[in-house]
Image 1: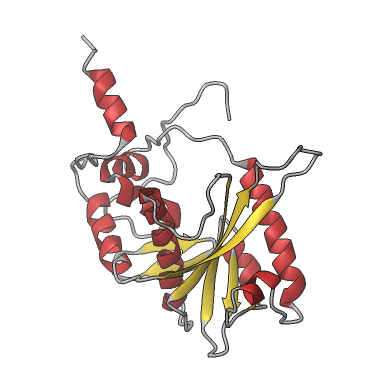
Image 2 (image 1 turned 120 degrees about the vertical axis):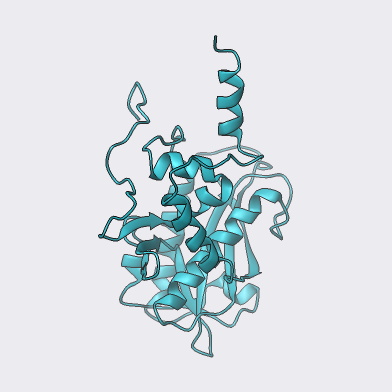
Length: 251
């Protein structure tokens, strides 16, 4: 990150009437769901939210999990976690998996009605005995309590993430199971000492996705991008709340 952050951007902006497809990532769809105003400022006017710092530890866990599952992929063997939960699935070896994992490519789909080029990068892909592909997402955290379900309000974004991936894969004419899985890694803090290593408890959380909201949301995003007016902010947007509070003190 640069010493001085400049949020103004002039590239990769949507222009009403543009003929070339406009790329929109899964995270930007989530941004629209969080706050249409922040989304419009970002994609239309080039004013992005201040960036967060990278979660390097989370990225390391993701990389190691991918290596671990990839060791079993070629032999079509189940991971011990899959066996522990008695899941009908194995990590699948697919020719496009590395592309689908790439943050700048991912699973791609050109939405003809809006000319929006949508994409999102998955963590893993399994397949069941019925030939259905299963979306798998890795999550890592450190909490004192055991994680067995996605019952927190902020887990809603995880669920939408899963459903967008399922939707994208279906739009590429693949048969996709409604059931996806989160491989949740919970860093343990109850060890006697650090000893140069961090241990995790692994949990497999099943989630039955419903992607019927995605199509209408893409249409709403397109309408938002083509509007000449900045939308109202979300009632729960901390960024907009901060801007409004700060502005109230300006003379």
